[in-house]
Image (cartoon, rainbow, N blue to C red; front, side, top):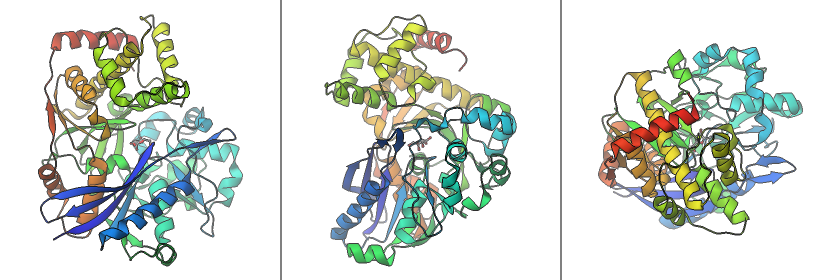
Length: 490
Ligand code: LFR
């Protein structure tokens, strides 16, 4: 048997199309297309270049032709962003990037309408300015004409699915990133939306991951001369696609998904939206099979990616491997930042902001690139420690190991420091978790794989993992105490 399906996985800085081959026992991946995802600042607004991204979907379909029969395709993307469609099915304007400044102050406006605790209890999402609810409030306040013109709101993966099939639906995992989703009732949180002034009719029906949305539209097939293919709603949220590929078949694990963002969490049967969860900044999102991913969003490798871009803007090209080496060779434990300080969210001169943070908090200011990078790496690792402890305190569970997945685990220094800082074994792999999870859900939808635990078993058998054992516990304990003092109770 050689069953083939196509995964299209959009990350915040690049995307890829991967053919998954399934022989009945193992999944093997073949990357057929890779492209960069370059947001565009136009007249002061930061947009995703949706037309370009859809062009890359078409390129992926064209390239898939040489593989013969490909039965289905699934699209996953980052969370929270959306496009607005008018009643004729036209995209009203390019989707705005979650890092755009339009959401400044919107959380406070929202809290004036709905108190924080009931807002959290109703939606279960960690409060972040980037969330869909706050983006929509900004549109409502500053560009209401867009919402008047809009017939439907479609989240990014659903927007691709719509232009591929003509069907307008919302996949459940991506709905659960909006802060407009009721995690307990598993439906749109209409009362929350209403309080925020967001019209109910904008929303489309929610379907669970694994649903067949439709097939490639006639127009797409004709234009590209491709065979018909099913379009499956995989876990549209990349983090949930990655979760489906954690190589831990028994389901009781802590995971750390490492890409532009770091998502640290575990899987639960039911949402947890009590006071402790809210204070710890934990979010509930729906994963495959209706499981809840209970996790913390941490700014992640964005700090390294954007530092690299800044140096490139200054005419200095360094690779990630150079950066890892510089950090590894630099003096440890010199200074720390709070990676989740709001000053680090927007694009720009991250190195300068790191130096400012250190100066403002009375610490030695990094003088070399190595010192600066070391500061970022060790602060991230210690932030992970704080997140695992928060997770344990909320769930009453104890996690002896952390499963690290995603592109970030190519960075061995990060894996090593994570094991040390968290004082836990790190099991790293697979790098391509998101594509694998996307593929696995398509294979579950077609009946070739029975369920998620079989999918995880197959992925465990198909992939190699690398294990990192913690060391230097005393030094890291001291570092953790220093880190907590510097970042406060955040
Ligand atoms: C990771 C991710 C996170 C989400 C962030 C913004 O790629 O999807 O889960 O919080 O991007 O959407």
